[in-house]
Image 1 (cartoon, rainbow, N blue to C red):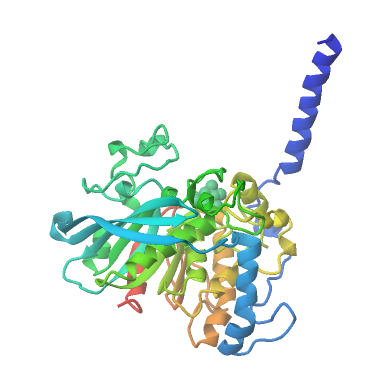
Image 2: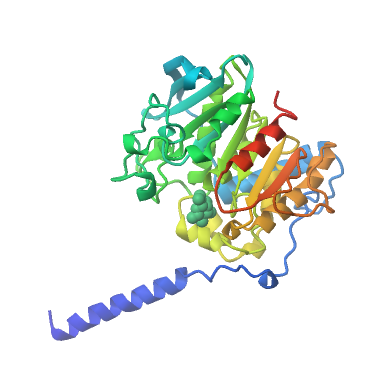
Amino acid sequence: MTPNQTTVKPLFLLLFTLITSALTAQPEANYDETKVPKFSVPDPLVTFGGEAITDSQQWEEKRKLEIYQFFEKQIYGKVPALLDEYSFKVIEQDNNALGGKAQRKQIAVGIKKNNRSLNFNILLYLPIGNENAPVFLGYNFHGNHTVTDDPNVIITEAWNENNEDLKIRNNKATEASRGVRMNRWAIDKMLDKGYGIATVYYGEIDPDKNDFSDGLHSLFYEEGQTKPKTNEWGSIAAWAYGLSRAMDYLENDTNISNVIVFGHSRLGKAALWAGATDLRFAGVIGNDSGCGGAALSKRKFGETIGQINTSFPHWFSESFKKYSNKEEMLPVDQHELLALIAPRPLYVASAVEDEWADPKGEFLSAQYATKVYELYDKKGISSTDVQEVNHPIKQTLAYHMRSGKHDVTDYDWDQYIAWAETFAK
Ligand code: GTR
C-alpha cells in the first residue's frame, strides 16, 4: 500500500461515517408543549375519499376496513400466510398452587409452517372456586418465571436481553431471575377478585433484536428469503400474532370465560394491535404504550416515528420507515388504532413522568377515538373530560394517568380489575 492510500482510506471511512450518521441522526426529542407543531388528526368518521360516516353500520362497512388495511400494510405489517399446524399440550398442572389459591397450568404451544416449527409456553393461573373466570393475558419481558416466585414455573430457554438488575446474563434466564418482576404482576389481587392470569415470554415468539433470521418470521420465509417483505410484519405484529395463538388455547379452556389482553410499553403496542386484529379479545389494555401504541404520532412529543424506527428498525413493517420524521404525511393517526377496537372495552393508561411515551398524546388519542365508541352508544373520554393525575375515567373506553414513572404498578392493576368488573364477568 502506498502512503497515499493509507491516508485516503481512513478519510473515506470518516466521510462515509459522517454522511450516514447525518442521514440517520434524529432530531432531539421535544418535551416542550409550546414546540408541538400545529397538527390536525384525521377524522375517524370521514373516509379517505371524503365521505361522512354517521352510524356504526357505515363505520363497519366503509371506514373500519380502510383504516385497518392502512395500519396492516403501512405500519405494523401483514402476516404473510396461514399456519400449517397448531398444537397445544398441558405439560404441567397443579390444582393447589400458590398456597392453594390457584390452579397452575403450563401449556406448550407448537406452531408449524413450511416444516419449520416454533414453541412457546403459556403460564396460566386460574382462581380456585371460580369455574368460569375472566383472564388477563399479557406478555412478560424476561420469562414466565420472572412474574412470580413460584418455584415450579419453567425457566425459558429462549434468547433474553441482558439486564444486570434483573440478573439476566449471557442472554439466558436462570434461577437467579425467578420472581424479579413480581412487582409488575398483581397476581394475588387478580386471583382474590376471581380473575385468572396468563402470560408468555415475548422472546419465545420473536427475540427482540434487529435480526429476522430467528423467531416467528423465519417460519414463513420462501426459499432464499431472509427478512419479511416491505409490507409484511415487523416484531410488534409478530408478537400480536403470538397473543392470538395463546388465545387459540385459552378460548378452548372450559374454565375460562373472557380474555382481556394486556401489555406494557412495547408490549402495550403489541396488545393494542392484537386487540385490533383479533375480535375474540373481550377487552384491551395498553399500559404506557406510547409511540406506535396509543400516543398520537403527529404531536411529535417525546419519542417520534423517526426515533422508534431508528432505535428499533425491526418493530414495524419496512413500509413505515417512509413516515420517519414525516408524521404529517400519515393519513391516519393512533387514535384510529384505538377506534378499531370499538365497541369493545379498551383502557389506555399513562404515567405522568413517562414523557417519552407522551401522556397527553395518549389522552387525546383516547378522546379522539371516542366518537367511534359513541356510534355504538358506548362512552369514552368526552371533550369536557380533563387529564388529571390519579383520576381514572372508567368508561368503556377508559383512561388514567398515574403518578410516577414508566412502569406497571398495583395502582394500574387496581384500576384494570375494577374496570373489568363492569364487563368481564
Ligand atoms: C423504549 C421505546 C418505547 C417503549 C419502551 C419499552 O426504549 O422507545 O417505545 O417501547 O422502550 O418497551 O419499555
